[in-house]
Every structure is written in C-alpha cells, then in structure tokens.
Length: 418
Image (cartoon, rainbow, N blue to C red; front, side, top):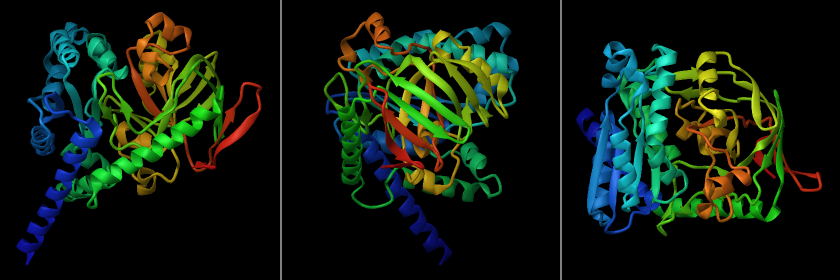
C-alpha cells in the first residue's frame, strides 16, 4: 500500500512539474519555433530544467543551453579566493549572453537558491562581488529590462530553500511542502493551466488599462509606519501580466505574477514607508525596513536586521537610493493567502504591493523602447546597476491615486482594489 501511495504521489508531482514546464515555455516565454533558449539554474533544479528543456524542444526550439550554478562553489570563493577576486566577474560570459540575446535567443531563469547562502560571509566582499557582477552583466541586463527579448522566471524547490521555509520538518517533507507551495502560487495545480494563465494574464492587463485611463500623476500610500507620495514618470504606462517584447513575442516575465506596475519619477518620492515583509537579499534577511524619501532619494534608512547590507545596497550607485518601480498587488493574492514567507522576491513581491530601488523599466514609458538614456532620464526613469523589490503593502494600507490638480481618489482600501 505504501509503495502504491508513493507511486501516486510521484505521478502527481511529475504531472504538476510538467504543467509548470508547459506554462513556462508556452505562456511565460511565448517561445517561438526556431528560437534558441538560454536557461540559468542551480544544480538542485535539474529536474525542472529537464522538463523545461523537453517542452522547449517540443515547441520548436533549435537549441537549449543551460548554465548551472553551484552554491557550494560560490562559498568556496569566499573561503579561499584572494581579496582581489571580489572585484572581478566573468564579463566574457555576460558578453556572450548579451550576444545570444541580440541574436534572438529567449531567456529563462529558474529561481530557487539558498536564501541564506551568503549570510555568514563578509558583507563588504559580498557587496563588492555584487557590484562587479552588476557592471559585467549590464549589457545583457539592459536587453532584458528593456524587453528586447522574450524572457521569464520560474522557480524550483531546492533543499536549502525548503529548509529555510520549513526548518522544523524532515528534508523530504520540507521539499514536498515547498513544491506544493510553488505549484499553487504558479497556478498549475489543476488541468487547463495554460488556458487559466492566459485568462489571468488578461485580467491583469485589464487592470493596467484601467489605471492607464486614469493618468494619475502620483500615488499616495498610507498605513502603519507609512505616509508616502510617489510621483509617476512623465508618459508612464501601467503594465500587468504579459507584454510584447521587442521581437514581437508575448511573454510574462515573472511566474507567478499578481501585480500591475509602472515607472515612478526618480525625483518625486517624498515621505516615509515601512516594509510589510522582510527582504531576502543576497543571502541576508533584512527585516523591519524603514526609510524616508526626500526629492526622490532615500535620506534615512533603518532595519531591524541586515542594516549593513541595506546600506551597501542603497550605496551601490547614485540610482540605488531612488525608485525604479511601483507595483500594486491585492492583499488577497494567492501568495498572501498562503501565509508563507518564501524568502524569494519572485514570490514575496506578489504577496503585497511593493516598490523597487534601482533600474527603471523603459517598457513602462510610452515609446520607451525607442528613447535614448538622456530621453529616459528626462522623463524621470531611474538608472542603476540594481533592481531590488521590497514589500510595503498590507491589509492595513490604503493607496490613493493623485490627479494633476492634486485631488485624490481611493484605488486600494485596506489592501484590496476598490
């Protein structure tokens, strides 16, 4: 009997894993026949990577190339590498990725690393390594953030991530719980996942269209520890769900996704805001974030834990202390209802309305794809080596849309759309 139940469980897991791969390739990527695909993933994600690879070839991919990372090898660098190592990154590899994207390749990232991998490492070395990587990866990142190519991110359960979320469970039980949480949040529990995702995508796009029709000049957030006004970029566009990339293919960049988002004006944020959830960043959990903005820039920043990492993050470059994204998410989203902290921004940002420090998306501006850097800056779009989301929404937060004449209209009441 036990063996039969185990077989049924494995079959159900495989069915859902295949659904996730199908959704990732056919809806998330919108992969076209004849395209190449570049996948990045950790070694612990090989089961999902193989399922995605199979679906990609079935969809007509000409070549699927996967770059695997290894957490243990990353730690060895901090243990044995010379100090100068932390100011270097594999620029040749990032240049190769940029060339692949320019040649038409799609990009899929599989998230799922150890959220506390670098928690015990020298924070200054971590910050230096992050800056070096950000500089090296900029050519490839710009092709992604400007949506020149079709791309998406999905998640795979890994032992370290499962332990972080369910530390009191046996490893197998923790992995099962995490996979079930990923499947639920990724909307692949039931048959018809591809069709259901397309319907969900349409709902998010309808919400974005509604906000675009309103043409608010700013958003005003109020709630516990929060009274923040964020001006929106000139000629901003709200997006939600999928988007049409520069190559004409429709993709949904993040899976799961529950947000509608746009580009703020990088010089028009004022007030103070408190995070509603911890931020897991480069292996460090930053909790109880509280910041104050003046003229679009953070002038005060405090946190309960991870203070040094928060300061390093904000100090990455000039744009790291300014906003590059604002996103609205209802408190009743499936991820919020789960009651879980995923220690992973891909999931946690979809549990609550959030803001992002750093690089803005040019796709959230009218004709942004065709603007020069100077034109983007003139519209208020921020530029930075980083883009880091953190959650501010809750069941106690209200969000008002501010019109050009200064009048305010309630958009979200106690965390829900009105």
